[in-house]
Image (tube, rainbow, N blue to C red):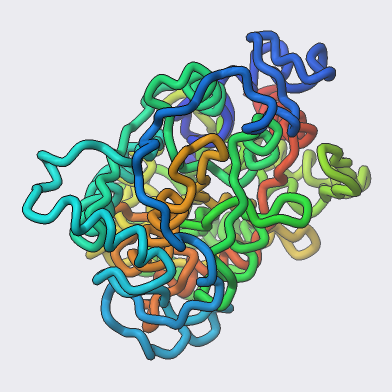
Length: 471
């Protein structure tokens, strides 16, 4: 049997860092030779580059929209999620509360905006209405959810939101900035991994979130991920972390460590169709992080500055263990993709795998076991990294109140709809989560958040380069 590693992409963390930030030579767009703020593309990463400092003329973007109370005064809005379970209790042992927020009929702090638009658009279908807000995103996995949220929001408010997918971009934030400065169909709000929040702030593209609070049932670590400095700049939407899946009909008990899995396989013959003991995407440092999680820490002492600290003794032990695994089994890093890993597991060809929580919906209906990432062995611990996806309101939008109202609507009011429509788990746990969501949430809340700093991008480049030396 093999420990097989996938090769979905060669640019870095899956759906996390664009190739422009992880170059083959290790030169970062926003570090190294561009430390004065010049990104080399005519852009300036400077927090002063906000509305007041912009040279682009952004007037006229929905300038005739009515004034309204909008986002003010709703930080402690009572529960009442999209499913109607306004008084549902919080999920047990998850660290979060019940899904809440305003109801889909338009109640809440954005009511003035919604009522004005509803009167104006009465009798006009969503398809026929002019676009009021644009939301940008990258992954197609969000398409169905965003289309559903936009339709529901139009019904509740009369405000038409147009989702726009930016596919295959090497510089997603750069494209948002360029479109904003040119006033050419720029997004009023956009989806963004929280570890890029600092970059969005320095571009001047992140308005403060004055709506969402932890009283909305948001998991505390997700709310923290939306904070930069002393301000909350994002609306937490969903999370992702690594988990360990294994064939329950082969392993009698949940393994305590990866070494226990390896030892067990030496004494217990698997079925004839089994080809791989373990699979994970070795070319993506997000999945490699558990092997080195015990020796690294991230310390941010001030804005825009982060120190990456290593325990050198542990680091050497981790390297030796990782090398021992690869020497013990045949590894072909170019043979499979993430899709192949899931397919092999479902077909019983793989006994165990490191997947992310986003992939778990693909295992629905299949009998398997699930747990947090196990330790490496009796002495070397392991944990996952985590990513929180945020909805960011563009600080340049002329419709900040309406954009904030929709951001709150899709992250809080629509929380119950997110998983079924996208496969992503909401940062607001279900009132009655099933066992898969409970394990996924436990993995997320105990994980190491991917650090939000331009300095930290060097860490992921180094980790990727270190791993690839073994292939």
